[in-house]
Each structure stands twice: as C-alpha cells, then as structure tokens.
Amino acid sequence: MTAKKIIGQIHLWLGLASGLVVVILGITGCIYVFIDEIKPLVYQDRMFVDSESSDRMLLGELTSVAQDAIEPGQSIRGVTIYNDPARTVQFNGYKALEEPQSIWFWDEIDYNFNLYLNPYTGTVSKLENRTFEFFNLVLWLHWSLFLRNDIGQPIVGIAVIIFVISLITGLVLWWPRNKSAAKQRVWFRWKPTTKWKRKNYDLHNIAGFYTLILALIIALTGLVWAFDWFEDGVKWLANGGKTIENETKIASDTSLITAQYPIDKVYQNVRQDYPEAKSYYISFPKEDAATYYVYIANDGVTGRVNAQYDQYTGEQLSLSTFSDKNNGDKLRSLNYDIHVGSILGLPGKILAFFASLVSASLPITGFYIWWGRRKKKKRKLQRRMSDRPTTRRTHRTKPAHVRAKVPSPAD
Image 1 (cartoon, helix red, strand yellow):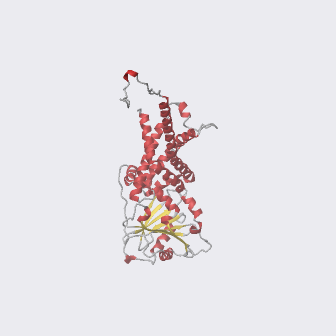
Image 2 (spheres, helix red, strand yellow):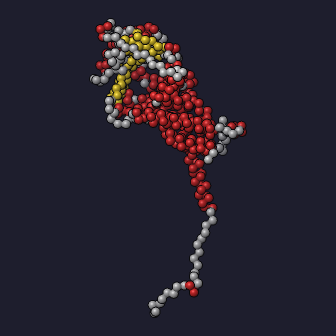
Image 3 (cartoon, one colour):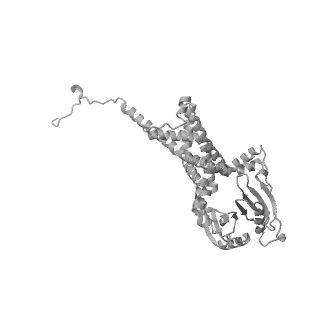
C-alpha cells in the first residue's frame, strides 16, 4: 500500500470509531454557541421582572429569602446580580452525592437548582430543577454524553483526539497534486445533472477544508476541559515552560464581623468599583476559612475581573484583572470564549456555529462515501464472478462392455 492509501485507511477507521460522538458534540455545540441569546427569549418570565419600583432589597435580605425558599438541607452556592434593572437575581446551588448511584450524570447529583428572585419584592419567579432543564441537558450531553464525569469525559476527550487526527489526515487526503485538481477541491461545481453522490463527496471535502482551522481550534479548546494534563500542558507552554501556582487567600475569624450581612458590603464595594459591569457573580464560602469569590463581567473578554473578599468583614483581600494574570491563566480564562467563538463577538459565534455544523456532518458524509464505495466494490466483485466461464458436467452413457451386468430375477 502507498502512504496515501495507509493514511486513507487511518482516516476511515478513526472516523468510523469516533463518528457518533463527533455528531453529538457538533449538534449540541451549535445549540450552545447561542445560549446567551436564546435563554432570555425562552425564559423571559423567570429572567425579567417589572422594574418600575426603584427600591431594591438588600442582597443579604434576598439571600435569606432564597435560603427559606429552597428545600431544607440544601445550601446556596452563589448568586448572579445583573446591572440591568429588569433582570431577576439568580441564586444557584449544587451538591454531588458521595457515592454515585449509576453511570448517568443525574444519579450522582444530590441537588442542582437555579432560583430566580424579584429583587424589588423578594418573590420567587422560578425555582428551577437545573438537572433536567433543557439547556443543562444540552450541556451535559456535550460535556459527557449524559454519563458521569469520570466515565463520559474520557470518552469525549478520546473521541476529540481522534477527530483532530482525522482532520489532519483528511487534509493530507484532500491535498491536490496539481492546479487543475485543486480547482475541483476548492469550490462546488454542481450542475443540474450532478448526482447526489458527487454532491455528498464535495460537501465532505470542500466544506471540511474551509472549516478545518476553526474545527481544530474548537476541538483543542475542548480538550482543555476533557483532560487535566492537557490543560496543565497548555498553561505550561504559555508560561514558557514554567508552572505557576496561584495564591489562596484565607478569611479572618468570626470575631471581626462588622456587618449583619457581610455580602452586602462585598456587593457594595464591587458595584462601586465597577458600576458599568454587565453582571457580578458572588461565590459563597464553603468553609470557615474560605472567602467570597467575585467574578465581575465587564464588556469584552479582557475586561473581566476576579476578586476575593473576607466572608466575615466584607473587606477585599485580592483583586486580579486580565492584565495581572500570567500568560497561562490569560489563555485559560479565554478558553471558553475561543471555544464558542464569542472572542470575536457575534461574527465569531456565527463562524463557530457553522464550524460545529460542518464538523457534525463530516462523519455522516464520510460514512456515506465509504458505504457507496463498499457497495460499488461488491457489485464489481459480483460482475467478475458472473463473467467467469463455467464448466458443465455432461453425463455420458458407459459403453456396453464396461457396464455392470445386473442379474435378472430368472438367474
């Protein structure tokens, strides 16, 4: 076999091995690219309220209302506050079981909720079981195929690695020998008489070629979540071959409490420092020595800020802007935006959408090409077999002198 035929076999069997997973990842990726645009349209009743009143409740009071609204034994993980006066305040909570009940992701979850509160009245707009919410199901199908993390993530990661190899081998197979051959592989030359098989072949080769770079970027950024070693390797390379550990702040003790609701002081300081931010996410401390982690979403991917605040006093302990991060952390913080294309705004999301759509189609069009060639080979083999000369056996009567004498009854 020539080198190109060997590469063709590698491309074929790797594509067949990972095809189903790639189709699922591509379709769910198409949906999730526009999650920020779709959800406010679908969930208007829970995400928006009448903002005629100018008096908002304190965040500490809303937190108490939220804690009373959820099930006993559940706790709040964090809260998102939007600067848009018409948006609800969104509390969330999550807890995994110590011992998963089965291989499915929902059987390893104790509780997973989103609670939407009216910031003016404190009334509950929606208590959402996030485990079976549609967009969360799309995310988990994309994330781990509805399987537990320790099972689904390696499967998805391996399928993505195979997909990356398939893209590279596909480029080798696509590469034309000369200029005349290249013309046939860079644009669709369809006529009214062009058969579907030819159209399918062109969709696989030409569309795959034009989305190759984007598909590789999406796949490689996805591997950052799939494997810790890949994430650490990317950060190590970005930091010039160095491993940099981030400093962890420790909260003070309860004797230094200066407010009934320290979270109000945290929110007041954050909003005073960043009044034009789109939203603020405050992660609640889980331990006595832990801190409030605050994520400030400003316009632009480089405008985001991370901060830590003392859970007892509400005092700021640390502040990290994008420019303060090392190269590895900068690249890691941009990973999601690169993955979904939002780093280039709406045009980037549109490009990511079509790249995901083409990626989902590649295993399907590739399978159809393989199946058509397989059937063609089978028909050729049958024709060859039918064209072979056949030797017919003729039954000749033996001569009389060699015939066996059959005794008669008279004998």
